[in-house]
Image (cartoon, rainbow, N blue to C red; front, top):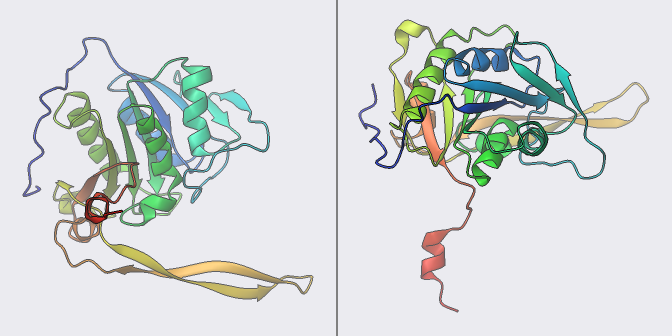
Length: 266
């Protein structure tokens, strides 16, 4: 397990009644990852699903302002109330609060994403932006990502980690006024070492565009790249994932550089 223990919140309180839990993602309402997350979340409270009707990976914090949005109820998860939305993951959270729930849910869980959202990936992630939108509205939120891009990925370990995190959050072990980025390694359960509290690694993508010619003779470009970890620290999310831990990083939407702020004299 992690060498750094997560201290219980002094202010967290466990509600007697079951909480309302909003579930969303960026892979789309039919993705296997969201079904896995729903299975875990429904053990803790009333679940309502609002998710994109198609994959929205890499959308970041995009919102729809130039065209109308549509919501349609779907029956994909048994008795769970669920809707598909034509907009982005952030749109889904906004609409869920305003038009479906008509109030703020007690928690918002996003994912389980197919693929990593560690380090710099959090900036581009629709999964994490949905969770961040909830956090902006003072809704405790967690984004879950599994380092397996396959549609047929085995989410057994991811569900175990999600259950652990949800239990800690709902029962006050984790402060419930925060936003968390959780990533799960693609390993056998017997190799899993536990949940590790981490900071975001200093890493980035070294990107390039492959140039090709379409059937009409016109050029088009395909984004590719190589992930580069520039951080040698042993308390980062990238290090944890490489060493068979699931990483949990508290993050925030305030982008102020406070060290620089304090050093500037105008």
